[in-house]
Image 1 (spheres, rainbow, N blue to C red):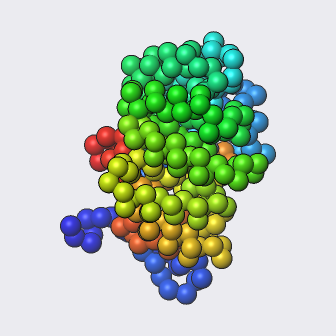
Image 2 (cartoon, rainbow, N blue to C red):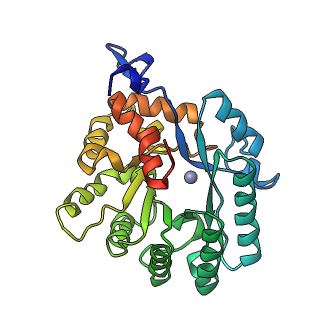
Length: 291
Ligand SMILES: [Zn+2]
């Protein structure tokens, strides 16, 4: 493939401002965008920007971004609300084909959560969002393993938040959950954030024939927070050790804007070919999108 055909057209200065770097400037899939489904929700996540459908569609045009994963989060014990949320996300993705539906269940809803997973899978949903902090569950709980088993049966992907202030063992629990449920696929959002180096254990797991490489990570939050920090070299080294094919682009909008996320990614100093994998081709492979 020729250099030009990869469309690495944007030229910026590197973070230290010394040498020019060429960045990937082609199609982007942002797999981590929170959408507010009502008036209150559109204002409750960020002090600086709202996250209504209109806000999301307007930044998609301005960046531009090809596809966006819109996320909702289920509350425990309210299946009517969970179904309403998931149906809203699915309806939006049908109305706007550039929106990828990321639905949710609560692991402690047990059998009802499995029924909901099967229902939305039939409607074309591939990704389920789970958030141990916000949904208040422990990743090692048997109910979470049951959701992972169900995701494996349904060939679904579990998008887990992977940063906990309270549970220092959470990365290990997530990795074990993925390793023991090889039929399910997992995305660890934020790449563990401040705990990213613990994910190096994935490089060790790759040596075992039974490990199915079913863990991906999105760089939401971690790219703008650590991309231009003293941790940068360690972060990039860890990403390359695990394997660049496992990394995805995400903004975590409205916490960060896609512009901030892209700036953070550029500051990391990956090659333009690696940026293309992170921003686009890895997500196409994972979600079976025709590039
Ligand atoms: Zn998020």
